[in-house]
Length: 510
Ligand SMILES: Cc1cc2nc3c(=O)[nH]c(=O)nc-3n(C[C@H](O)[C@H](O)[C@H](O)COP(=O)(O)O)c2cc1C
Image 1 (cartoon, rainbow, N blue to C red):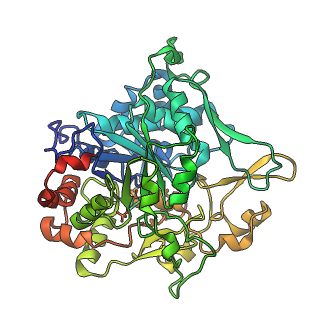
Image 2: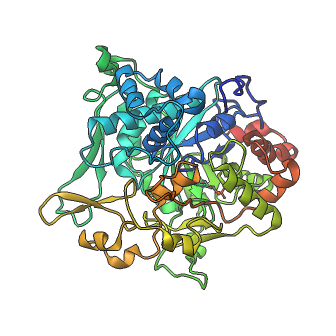
Image 3: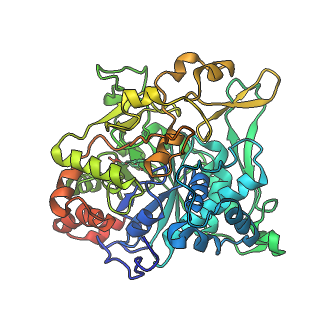
């Protein structure tokens, strides 16, 4: 999309919810880059909450700069970054005018670790700033950013960058995000903050990942001090969880209490919580969920915080059902993942919509595909890693490392391992060989899914892997109403438009 094509005229507001009110629809964060800034911006302009994915933004920024930054959006955003010298270093390092030769591999970015280099930290801060800046450009709607608790090492610097960009909401799932409210409070005052890091087999010493705006002050490169600037806006924090027990745990202290919850069922796209108790698989190898996995909404409601329902809540009827159950609204991913503004590769999007139209779209819940260790939904699509032959043909390697986890080495140091790396390397690092079985390298696959797959020697490119929700009935309606090229505003209109019968739509704003 060129700058000229991006009209700054706001979309008509849908659903009677003001830009600053509580949203009825949250467009869920979808990594890597599926909910990039064009999608979040399009949703925010309807008056609902658009959420960019905060996962691996350093790599997507670096690779897009290497593709020549079509439209100049990233360089425009970086020109507003409060540390111009850092922004210049990033552009000098990664920008390739006219784009890399398609046979050339992308230049690597420094990997995550407990002691990140200055280059890694400034790339993380600037990339998160740029994504939020672009999503918020030219309108007054609200924008959130989504992180995975599992990727602990990236979080502090990434959150600070998003706050510099003016992010309105931070959402986090895939773990227990107890440290985030305090982190946001600290960063709002430009104070340092830290999060505990889990080190497998650790000696008991506490490991921390931290970020200090004073020691890494983007503006200090120009002699000014950001830390003496007025407090940054403190975003609202929504914890994405799947159990009322966890809601209670997070609410037990002020320091861990979020501002609301997204309550996600196991059919939601992406990762989901495993079933309670011992993992049982059905004949198709999918985790079996039962009554104990149902979320007790009444119990969640006792905390007095707003909540949104997610995972199959993507039809107007389900929005109404959520509202009747006391929710402020819903979070949807699947219908947005296939809309015009999503970052999903256009060819993959078209084939998935054709499958949906033909009634042949199948999404499985894989217990083992994700190195994160959580069940992960994968769409069956030839040529992607859902295909056993494509999976078997890909040499195992780990060169991005977002899902690597720290472990205690025998010599006292800390190493990093990922169950999707070569099995021998994982076992050598003390990992269980059986944990490597069936794992997909999501880091490389999800970048390929948005057209940023690494090009390898020998002329092959990393294969993609698509995640979607298992309840995709909404696609029948959307295809029927709008055809194969529907917009994010169409999705919002579809979800909220039919609620006219409910009377006061403004109530949806909570
Ligand atoms: C393509 C895709 C990627 C997703 N990636 C993430 C993610 O990175 N982090 C996250 O918290 N949720 C992720 N989700 C979940 C969505 O944010 C949302 O909660 C979910 O899609 C809602 O259920 P639905 O798929 O039935 O609409 C993803 C979903 C999809 C479809």
